[in-house]
Length: 215
Image 1 (tube, rainbow, N blue to C red):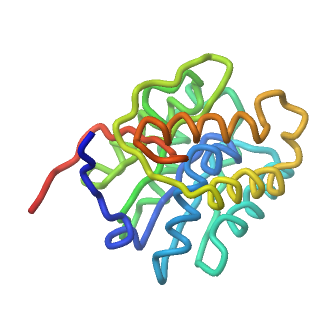
Image 2: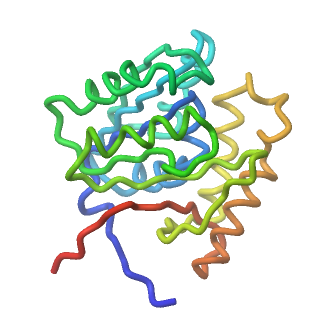
């Protein structure tokens, strides 16, 4: 495989990260955010979380600081019902449009459009109606549905960085510790698999519906 290098550090100054649930962003692209935080001076990030009760949203705010230390980061919460986003399509779209309104955005991180979870999929399907001329990368979330696909874009992660990701996940979201899918082995295993696919030790993988090669 001959890599096509996309230098996010030269363009991703203002990032919007979208999640249906408070931990989606960090599970799907927490390592990528840690890499950006370490290499992009003046990085600003807005987390947009569509669902979540007060406890989980407080975890999301704490997590945003853990994953982006030293950078300007804001969390916008929708407070919509978990598991019901298809029925709240208009409210979800308005939440995303509020995040886009009057802001320069260089990179949008969002769930994959073919994600099996209805909440993730609803957010993903709305994204291109809001950010039409932006680089949108769709992250993946492991789940019992077994919906992992064949991504084409990878962000490589060092051993240290991927372990920082799983450490900060456990620190940020103690409410999820009892869930059988929320553990270091799941997150490290997926990162190792995606790393193998791109000739690295660890990686996070993404999809992109549309991109322009310019030179």
